[in-house]
Image 1 (cartoon, rainbow, N blue to C red):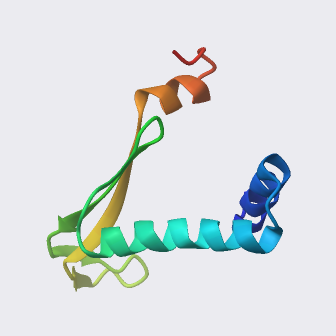
Image 2: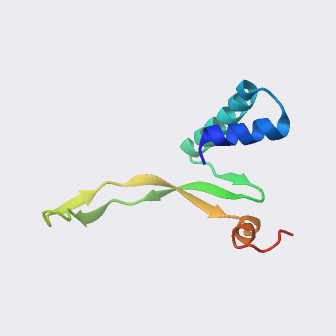
Length: 95
């Protein structure tokens, strides 16, 4: 599913113009992105939690040459699905 697909589905359900729906969807994603960039968590009730965690620097290996390299520390985004989402994905009726 793409962002355009989401806009189309919301447009059909809500009835606003596609331009308005696209703007709202874009603003939602931008807000989530900005919040995560600041290192804050994003919790969407009934869906899940997005958070940022720090990975430390570590030694790695180039698989083609076998030489050791250092993989720099970095921040990674994690997502943990809510129980409602897990149940929906696995076919159990939502509470």
